[in-house]
Amino acid sequence: MTKDLKIKAGVVGWPISHSLSPRLHGYWLDKYDIPGEYLPYAVKPEALGEFLKSLAKKQITGLNLTVPHKEIVLPFLDEIDEVAQRIGAVNVITVQKDGRLFGRNTDGIGFLTNLKTSAPTWSSSRSSSRSFSRSSSRSSCGAAAVIIGAGGAARAAIVSLLDDGISEIRLINRTRARAEDLAEIYNDPRITVCDWQDRSKYISGAALLVNTTSLGMKGQPPLDIDLSELPLAAVVYDIVYNPLETPLLKQAKLRGNFHVDGLGMLLYQAAPAFQDWFGRTPEVDQGLRHYILEALR
Ligand code: ATR
Image (cartoon, rainbow, N blue to C red; front, side):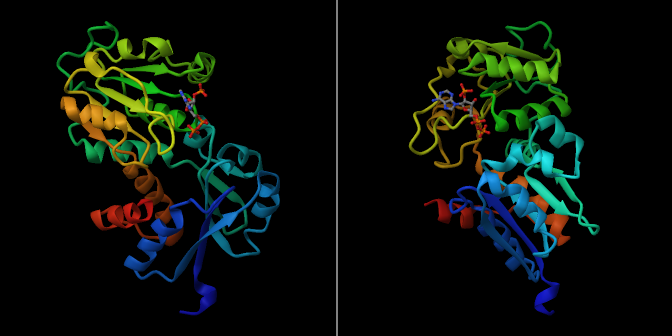
């Protein structure tokens, strides 16, 4: 195959050197022997519009977006899928044959696929916790999730859980006003905003606890929460993946809760983009996990 037939994709961010996406997509390109390339692009926020205009000329078909571009990219796109519009962010762009830029968001897919794959008994529409619903009559026949945080990752988690049929979301953020803004945007009776200082209380009866903040990440303080009110059947999910076992997950593991780390979310959000651009559904396997973990070490 000639060089020109290579499918070109990449990831754009500022800074970009930390991104694991080139390693991740490179693993799949090698594994499936696809004549493609996936490169990192360091682009300042003020230069994003110009960079996007140059994609067709550079023959780049696909682009991932990372911090700080996921939200600011929206006005530059010709079409944005419904889920990305609701999340308010785009992490995948595909350049159409006519040069139009189509944006979607696969973070919610990554979040949910990781949850369902890692905790196969998880069901949003039916509680896996027998002691569930002590604190809410509304949720007596479904699962309640507690989401900590109100940033972009929280939005992806909220949209995917609502779409998956969750019965209740208790949204808790240090800055309560940000959580209230999200509750207003989604305008769904299943979302309740709860006080940050009472977070250890609001996990009572929950089937899922998710940390979407950076607390627990290398160099950050841990998420300070007392898990004693959390049912033992509840799943504890931390979207942080560096370290893989955060203090929150360590705490959950010690008391016997099922726990899900954040690495799978990174891997599963990448798979649909790879499929869009390179035409093959890639497998998220142990080899890939180890390969990415090596880079984190
Ligand atoms: P992302 O898009 O990755 O979710 P973000 O939009 O910056 O990032 O959101 C970061 C989230 O982590 C927010 O919910 C933030 O809480 P605030 O809205 O109060 O800022 C939360 N967060 C970050 N550092 C925190 C800390 N030290 N304590 C509590 N929450 C923190």
